[in-house]
Amino acid sequence: MRDTVVAMQSSRIREVANAALKNPDVLAFWFGESDEVTPVAVREAAARSLERGETFYGHNLGLIELREALAHYMSDFHPGGYADRIAVTSSGVNALMLATQLLAGAGDEVVAVVPVWPNLTQQPTMMGAHVKRVGITPDADGVWRLDVQALIATITDNTKVVLVNSPNNPTGWTLNVGEQRALLEHCRRTGTWIVADEVYERMWFGTDRCAPSFLDIATAQDRLIVVHSFSKSFLMTGWRLGWMVVPEGGALAQIGKLIEFNTSCPPEFVQHGGLAALAMGNDFVDGLVQRLRVCRDLLLSRLQQLPGVTVAVPPGGLYAFLKIEGQRDSLALAKRLVSEHGLGLAPGIAFGPEGEGWLRWCFASRAPGRLSQGVDRLAQALKL
Ligand SMILES: Cc1ncc(COP(=O)(O)O)c(C=O)c1O
Image (cartoon, rainbow, N blue to C red; front, side, top):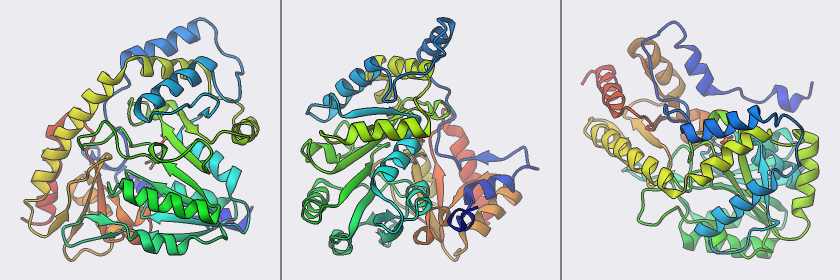
């Protein structure tokens, strides 16, 4: 076995979830998904595909009609041409891995903006690359910010890839257009690729239809890969379906080869589910975001009333990221909350040392009352 793999940290969120196994009464907010099932139109489309007997290998890059539908979907949000720039992947995390395999080999330098969902930094580590972490930092009110000049100073001619997830899991921090421009212009000078994880772009509570995207400012020739997923916007976490947008030129052919050697293709019936999701139109996602906004506002207004709790309203994503005065060890705290109070949150340390002392609370729920109940349990734990 490779030492690099053996040395990798297993999931701290799973560690907390395991501490709850003996407690059936846990209110779990630790995973990044809603408790709403996938829309019926999507499930039926997949079932019909199976009934038709579509159980064979497919094209490495995905069904042509799904690629075309995705190109249309993308151009609706980010004007431009996406034909021959899209690969359908077996989840967002698979798309991230393919981008890493394409760009970062053993000994290569990768820069990542952190704290972040750990898969982003673990994948290049798995490949033997060296990951340099650039931290966003919280102010006294719990709003996280990037020192873009510090990020730029870290990216040199030796940097193969910069990884940015925005809106960010776990903090909700989101790059603004000025920061994106500064980063893109610098990466053009150093020849560095940007891998932008924009899976939460539609989970956006601002006035625009989605969060700022690198696709709005980049050309089709820029060294940019944008990663997307059906998981969050269409309630399809268990389906394992995503896509990636790559530059014009040879990148798509290389990704096709990598898909062949990883998974060969996404299952056809799952892709029919994806087609049905896109066919629901924007109303579905807009409705989902409205429901999420109710959840976010309810959770945040209650948390902000608790003395000793620091938490800012996130502009995007599915999470509140909070800090409790006097609590530094997030893993011990999360385990205590779950075993003694039946409240399941993710420890900030799961997202890197920059998240230590914080807790992540996923507010995507079809029953906002559960969130209130959870806050009651937190208040009880804090003896308020
Ligand atoms: C930041 C980020 N990127 C990518 C993903 C991957 O999503 P999936 O693999 O379900 O498509 C997640 C899932 O939680 C995520 O939080």
